Amino acid sequence: MSSKLLIKENHSLLTYNTFNLDTTARRFIELTNSEEIECFIQSEFANNRILILGGGSNLLLLNDFDGIVVHLSNKGIHVISESGDDVIIECSAGEICDDVVSFCVENKFYGIENLALIPGTIGAAPIQNIGAYGVEIKDILQSVEGFDLITREKRILTVSECELDYRSSIFKTNLKGRFLITKVKLRLSRKKKFHLNYRALNEKFGRRSVDIIRIEDVSSYIKKIRTEKLPDYKVLGNAGSFFKNPEVSPEELSELKNQHHDIVSFATSAGTYKIAAGWLIEECGFKGKRIGNVSCYEKQALVIVNHGGATGKEIKEYSERIQGAVKNKFGIILMPEVNII
Ligand SMILES: Cc1cc2nc3c(=O)[nH]c(=O)nc-3n(C[C@H](O)[C@H](O)[C@H](O)COP(=O)(O)OP(=O)(O)OC[C@H]3O[C@@H](n4cnc5c(N)ncnc54)[C@H](O)[C@@H]3O)c2cc1C
Image (cartoon, rainbow, N blue to C red):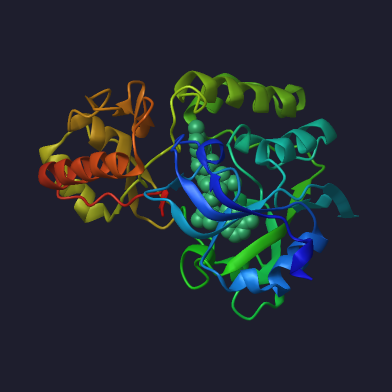
């Protein structure tokens, strides 16, 4: 059966990761449909060390990968059921996340528009529970389908079984590296409702009546803000926010505020506070600070960029300098959001 699979040897990953790192996979396979996926799962290749790859926009590759890189590029977005205002769509994992957003915007399916222009595939969206502008995939995810790479069984996980949390899920904990997501189902609404609490959105749309706000205006505005704020990875390699925003208790926050009056924080629904990691990094002098071919982006310190020719190890060393400086100045340990491989 595995003879049907096209395995490439020593395949360059340069165009498969948004940090633009010039690394190689010892073996590489592209899976474009369900038959190829099932064939791969049943093959001897599934015994290898595996790296599942979507758009490569949340990865830092330190070395050549001495195993098999499985690139998911299966496509398809379908409405599979409708009930009352709810619409359930099923998306193949290799669909580009922003194409799924566009599909929903065109069809006026509300709920996902704030996630416009996040790079990568929809299959990777549950891995770190992607989020932006007050919405997380958790808010609209219905279920995830895929294969357990150890038992080789097909499984469907409901949203609660995915254990989605801030930039985390079961796929980063108990099922880390052993679950290949092949499809996701999303639950959207035909009824007009928006999430406009995020400050920039509130300033733009907050005073308008919902009746006159259009879904395409919200998604276009988010695209505009993102394009202005974030570097284009085709020009300056990056993986978006490098670190998570650290979470502290109200007591810890007030202690921090005693020493750093202008610290930037946000209340969470759990009664804790998130500190803006970008602010901490900026306070340590890293915004725009270049070491070799690596720096923090000049407009957003939370994004580490490759000016060209940097290695994964150089980027990791740079990130460790940031962690050291933030720990010294604030006593806070920054945890990477990016998957370091
Ligand atoms: C400019 C920029 C802006 C960004 N902005 C945001 C943002 O606003 N919010 C946000 O949350 N993220 C953001 N990101 C991070 C990134 O876009 C998301 O994490 C995205 O979901 C990664 O998708 P991907 O397909 O590129 O995953 P990859 O980078 O290919 O993989 C990421 C992880 O998921 C695993 N994986 C990928 N596909 C599958 C699958 N089908 N089954 C199982 N495991 C899989 C990989 O093994 C890896 O561990 C940004 C990145 C960039 C470059």
